[in-house]
Image 1 (cartoon, one colour):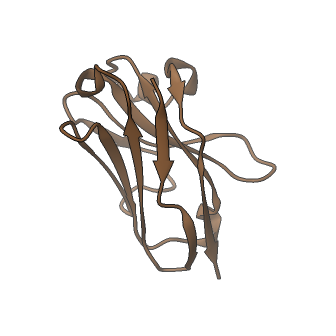
Image 2 (tube, one colour):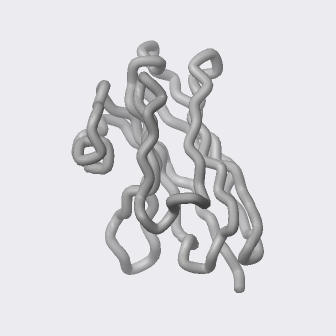
Image 3 (tube, helix red, strand yellow):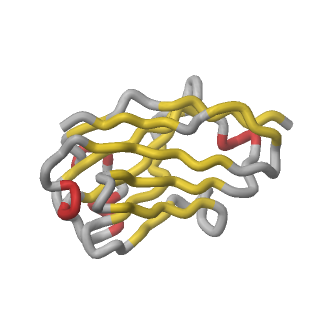
Length: 125
């Protein structure tokens, strides 16, 4: 499975970006798809995930600002990011994993088998 993330860039605080992640996997519709991010000098952080039932979970720092969605016909997962803050600056990675149901499992990076190359989001103040 190959994951290709895109959509990153430079945006001012308060602005919006939409990230996309296209998957080559044949079982995309049943996979759990997630977004993680890693800022310079910090550990990887869970951002959002969506499972095959389209249940969604979000990290505390992005709740009410970010929205994760999926298009199973296009094998693509999206991350709509609104009200961006300088603290959102990071490399964003998409990940694909098996069917998962709980927040505890969906927010754990080791539960995901495949990772994209990352796309850089920079939010200026």
